[in-house]
Image (cartoon, rainbow, N blue to C red; front, side, top):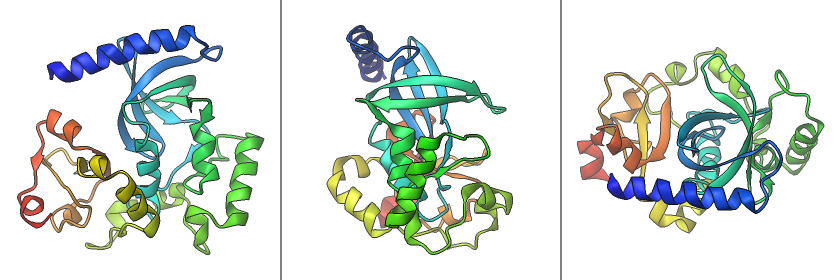
Length: 240
């Protein structure tokens, strides 16, 4: 715990220096400390913790095709300095924001990589529209499928609760390639069932006990699961 606090303090001090060297107007420097899924993270900034939802985009849910890939992409920014600009606040209390890393607009980058939709219900940004069209034309990411289901439709029909046991999507070749390139991080990841009664975390999304989860499944660092008093699933300990 002391090591984590020291890391956070060091990150905040670096963030202050980082901002003095040229933050964009209106932006807040911070450190990504938790990735919930492709378009939702927690950012520590100025002694506060911000739950952030990316502005103008919608990533596949974790139990959809490319949901894990989108989360893995976002997780590359775990424990890294970013800038974010708050645009609004949603009904769940999350800050709707644009997030930047070294000048890269992460919202748009997810769309360009075929890991998110332009969320036209809430955004008319022409740059995001062009990025989605380019990803569609190139059949990048989720657009490799002939008719991918938008996440807002997936949520409407029940999402994870509507799937059959054992039907959680297997990692795609793109995710396996990412795993090989980021082996140390992947070894310390956790899949967590978002159920009030759940007390375990899982090493593998194909764990037969995780398949019983009827709520959302979150992908995050195992350290964070342990901080919430979650313990490693005995089946995962033996099997994986």
